[in-house]
Image 1 (cartoon, each protein chain N blue to C red):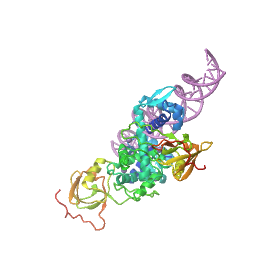
Image 2: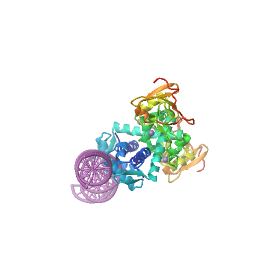
Image 3: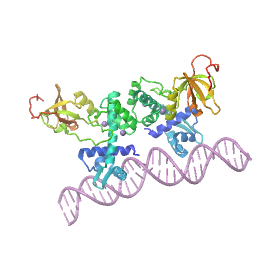
Image 4: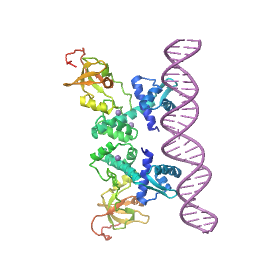
Length: 233
Length: 233
DNA sequence: CTTTTCTATTAGACTAGTCTAAACCAGGTA
DNA sequence: TACCTGGTTTAGACTAGTCTAATAGAAAAG
Ligand SMILES: [Mn+2]
Ligand SMILES: [Mn+2]
Ligand SMILES: [Mn+2]
Ligand SMILES: [Mn+2]
């Protein structure tokens, strides 16, 4: 049996490992979890003892297959809940993350099954994050890039947005920047402000926001950075 | 801020107080919660310090209005969840209690609101238990009696059944004994086995089950215990 | 009015999770 | 090579919740 707290650590380590690769440092975990480093040292010791991660002192940790399975299970619960709340209970995509965080450790496998079925076994949540499969296969790292790293003229499709900040999500929803939306980068200003064309509108996104939006190329054609759709910023 | 554990104690004390009236003894709480008496002594001390109950040493406890409000809040969550799970996620009434117990402390007020709305603000759960109102008014003790206390010839309507034992609930569901069903008591055997007519069928219920079914009189007419519908047991 | 019995409380210990303060190590700097 | 610096670990303490064993009070029996 695994406590909520342990599940949260494994989930956090999974995310960090997915972004920056192993090993994951004590301080990185501490920041993510909003705990002190000694607290983290203590917890990763327990998790290592129980076989959920490999630990090299003063170096960092890496999840074992078992640890990764736990993380994927929790993420599956989280993302199915987010999808269910938006689709069946009329939540906005800005509200669901906190609710899912509170419930993810407490639903039964039966509940998970019924929710997945009610939704037709979706494979992404409302923010575009992949929902791990029921047998917890490793999630394939999609070939996405950060909107922030693109240049004027690039034409891309929104793949995932960060689910953390409700205010940012409300803003993006207004702007029409949701998974599946096609964007053209029309301007990149000095401090990283990115202006994009969304349909017939233009939207300016602060660098802090553009850095949290993952995009993929717009499908087939080669994409020379032509400025033909670029109107004045 | 109130922990899950404290909420569970207050819920347990509420039920005990509703059944046998205050004061509620340490040992009664210990049995209900499956904890040891010293554990309960320790916890009721904390709850009294925080104003959720009055405590007289060696006598027992009684909920304050504030303690009762917490208990009603948790019960509202529990029963709304039971109703939602049966109506929207196709759970049987036997399965919902444990799931609701796990979730009741973790849903937000927003979730409560949306679930209540999705169900049309019901006032009873699938087992016939009253769902406290959103403003947590005291629940009026309905004039019900235990099926176990009835005599041959009595005609009654099922009001509430116990939600604790899934096997019993499956059995009652098969037997057609659900809230709203009209019953006629056709036999009471030596060890308390009660046989009732349900529609055109007869069902025999062990005393242990009959003791957990609450019933109310069958509406208007005076009810002389005539045996006219009584057929052979 | 004592004594017995039963229940409740106190005492003390243990686990999980967290913190602050102090020691420690590893890698970069001089 | 020797030193410094910054992240990491150890040491020790604290809270919440729980237990067992011992004590003490209340209520019933004699
Ligand atoms: Mn989320
Ligand atoms: Mn699962
Ligand atoms: Mn229940
Ligand atoms: Mn509520």
